[in-house]
Length: 481
Image (cartoon, rainbow, N blue to C red; front, side, top):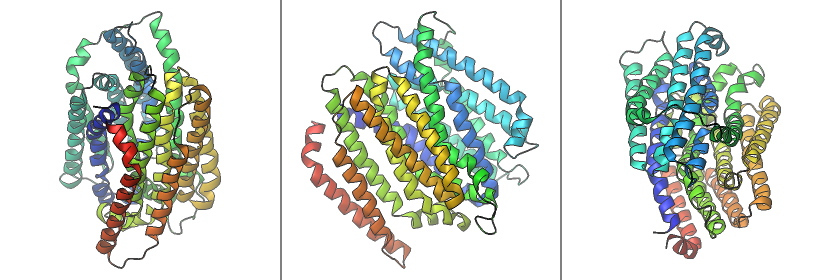
């Protein structure tokens, strides 16, 4: 079995463990938009935006450090596990306690005064997420994709079950979004049971030589993660700050944030595919770094990654009408679906960037990743500041695309200087631009009947897939041998 076939198989398995749970979580958008109007949904958006950013600080880049050091032949994996887990638990415990102590002012900052309990629950969620981050990384290193998948699926099953129970059986409007947070907390508690055996093996430890080396390797990854989360979350955090009053006639900034936050989730479908690929690809890149044929292998991986992402872009961006009908029960949210194609394209470039970033991880130049993501964060802030007052949440969506495309271009140019890889740039851009043009043309075709339109677009997509297979048949055959 070829290395690319093995990578594809592992991506599918990790997809079941990462894409499927997050996709099932995505399906909660229907009951959430049913029970919560846009103003209330904006609270959910803000809560999970800030937790996503803080989670990067809690794990401190130690997942990548674990992969790097555990793959060194002269180091004991158990020792590396102990050291990285000690760092993560120590940091997350400290910051969790800070959040608990500052729960009241934090609740006021999040526009939920009087609900300090939600901040405490979020602190507990963040702490548990951090505690199990290295155990999940260990499953990936040990190729235990099935166990990884089971843990993720059971967790999301609990979240979905509790959401429906809280929202449709014991729902109390006074508690509102607190039910959503509580469901996540209970589900995360399951992880402590799931990893009980592995956590019992952990022995808190510190090595005078190795621990500082891990810190030096990991802290640029952490800074890169914080900047990356700024790129991903900043628009949702600041839309209400920079949106002019009355921009959307008759609606508040909270209303606009609720609509934006709900519709943003459809673009995350692309990000889910990228995440599944990253789970499989990160250890894959490290494992094949010493292979003399690795540059060509990495280039081929990136090429087919772009093709798959283009197909996903086409499928989602040309079917927004049926997506809105199926998943957004409250029609008030439908107006925001125009942002989805722009965000999908932005995430496609983010996926390309993750592929290209292999060069600075493999050459131990992780500080370049910090420079690139901090630069992206600056672009995000400036672009949002300029575009939100002009175009509202559509401007914020364009800021996302500009940021990720700029990061991908800069990463490619630097990589060719320090770690040359023969990427098929012209072919990749041809697929991206051709797919965008095709999607634009399809969306210009008027259909009076929703289901007929969906069927016709489905046929066009199938023909497009066949065309790609015809164009790639020779190289694809060589890749899977």
